[in-house]
Length: 427
Image (cartoon, rainbow, N blue to C red; front, side):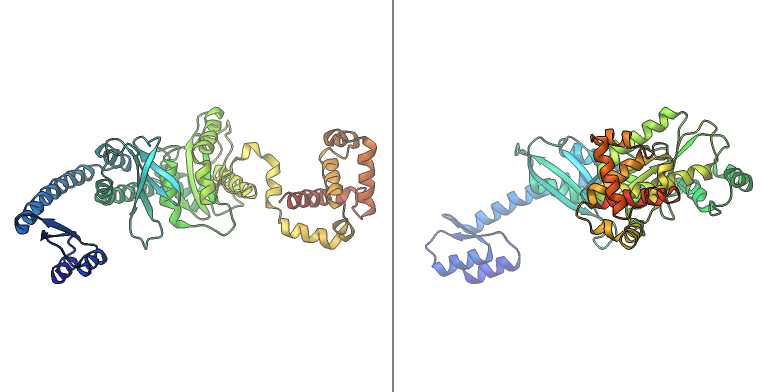
């Protein structure tokens, strides 16, 4: 018995058929430790073993044939969407999705209201910089064979990988004209007209036409000096949820798309669509988005690209997930480039009494709102819901603590310091 169990374990057998009898507890214990089931037969154990093997072999043959058919079906699809739809259809319409780091990139089928189990397999090389996951949400109805569902996902994984690699390659080729614009615009002193005049022939070859309306969409990290090129494939899949016609190019400092926009409404709708469909994913990935303004005269492409980049850089101060159009920011964009740590240090060095005062936050808020309202005590007091004399007392307190509120040349600096200190107090 011991020899038979060890032989079964070496061959990874799940069970051993033995003649019906009473066996020593040592043999039973060995079977338990090896994870091999003992099946006691009243008749000839060999005949029963052969019959069971035939039944199991027939079942496995059916499963193998089914998996082979699934493999042929997904191999015929060329787009990622079609591959996912085929997988879902083969699994009776259950929800299937491709994800990255908790972000859903593409999906097919209907997610169940009650999930019995979520089955996930890796897509691509585990050592790759980008590792996607293919997930199926199995409903609680219990009609699905979980092992078969996993096998279908594993069989379909090469087709999924091939589809997204093909789409990424095609997107890279289509994004060449967009990348060229960003690469050519290296002379920050050149105006848009000078840029277009200098590169007119090349722009025409790349397919750009003078006077057409576009909105530049810039993706970049929410943190300085943190650009991860491996996110390109991920962002391109996400970008398809917004538009499939305008390719996303990886450029120096981020990712850029130029989207046609015939009127201001189209530009506004684009910003809303990005915020609604990508906002949560961008926050998860630590990214922000900036959009250029829509202008009636159709400005040069170089100026649109610069506006988009400026909006993206400005949005970083508002945190990951921010989608910001330069049209909604205006001149306030200038304050986005203030080094808050440096300003806070200036406050510590030049206003030591204010920084050490226990009523510092109240005084700073009073100063900030006072300057927000053009140094009008009445308007500032109304905004703070305070009596005019109360606000005046707080402003006098600021003067006592060394804040120069009566020197016009220093008002801008005081205003910036007050705003930065307010932001630090909120954090």
